[in-house]
Amino acid sequence: MEEIKECTIAVQFCTDLLKHVQVDFVGVAIQNEVGPDVRWHCAVGNLNDKYKRITVRYGKGNAGRVISTGSPVMITNFPENILGKSTDYPIMLAEKLVSSYAVPLFFNGLPKGVLLVGNRFEHTFSKDEQLFIKKSASTLEEAIKSHIRL
Image (cartoon, rainbow, N blue to C red; front, side):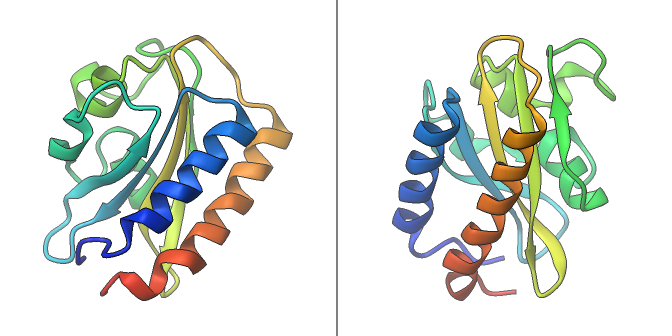
C-alpha cells in the first residue's frame, strides 16, 4: 500500500480518539502495497518515534494477527497469555503498553489496516469501549480510503 498521504487526517482522528476513549496510545498500521508486511504509519500518545521503524510480518503481533484474521485482538496484561513471543509484539514493547485493543481497517472489503488503542497499565476494554473503537475504525476507513492506493 502507498504511504498515507494525508497522515494529518489520521493523526487528528487518533488524537480525538485518544481523548474520547481515555487511553495512552492510539496508532494506525497499514499493510504494505507489495508483500504481506505491516507498518505503523501514525501514532499519538507515543513515547518515541520507534513505531515509524516497526514492520511486522503478516500474522504476527497485534497488527499482523488483526489483518490475517480480520478480527479484533485484545490484550489485557502484556506479556501474559499472548500467542507467540513478546518480541512478536514490537509496538507493545516500544510503547511500554500493557493492554491494547486492535481492530481491522477494511479497504475494498479486505482487512488491510489496524486501529490500535492501548494503555500502559492492565485494562480490560469494556463492550462499550470495544463498540466505540469499532465504530471509530469505520469512520477512519472512510476518512483515509481516498489516500491509500490498493
